[in-house]
Image: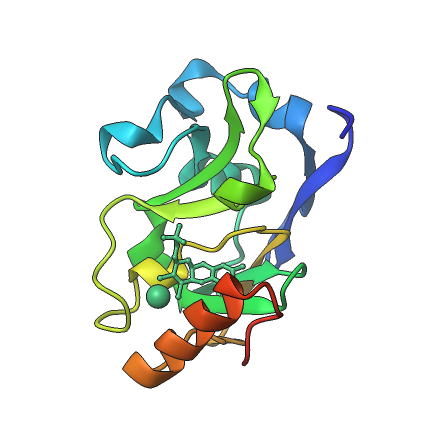
Length: 168
Ligand SMILES: Nc1nc2c(c(=O)[nH]1)N[C@H]1C(S)=C(S)[C@@H](COP(=O)(O)O)O[C@H]1N2
Ligand SMILES: [Mo]
C-alpha cells in the first residue's frame, strides 16, 4: 500500500467530509497521536490518533448524535452515541513505520480506550472495529451488526477462526 492510498473516510452529518491517507494520519500533530496502545491494551499494538482530532476537522453538524463505524471488508458495522464515544475513540493506523497489518485488524482499527465486556454496554469490546473503512456521523442510531448475545458472539468468532465470512 502506498502512503497516499485512501485508508479512511469520515463523512455523513459533517461540515467538511474527509478522505484520509496513511501519510495524512502520520502528519497530524504530536498532540493528536497516541503512541503505543499496548500501554492500555496489553494484547494490542500500534500507534493511532485520537478520534476527537478527526471530529474537530470534519465538524459534526449540530444534529449529529451517533457515530457509525463501517468495515466494508467483512460488512461489519457499529453505531454508538457520539457523546459517549468522543473522548474514548482511537484510530490505530500503524506499527512502527508500517501500516497496521490485516492480522491486527488493519489498515485501520478503531479502539475504545476503556471498553465494556462484549454486549454489556454501547461502548463494548465488539465496537473495536477492525478493517475500519468509514466513520459516518449520523442523526440516529444506524446499522449495527454486533452480536447481540453469547450465542451470536460465539458463532461470529467461530466463523472468523475457520476463515469464512462472519454471519450477520
Ligand atoms: N470488522 C470487524 N471488526 C470486529 C469484529 C468483526 O467481526 N469484524 N468483531 C468484533 C468483536 S465481536 C470483538 S469482541 C472484537 C474482538 O477483537 P480482537 O479479535 O482483537 O480481540 O472485534 C470486534 N471488531
Ligand atoms: Mo465481541
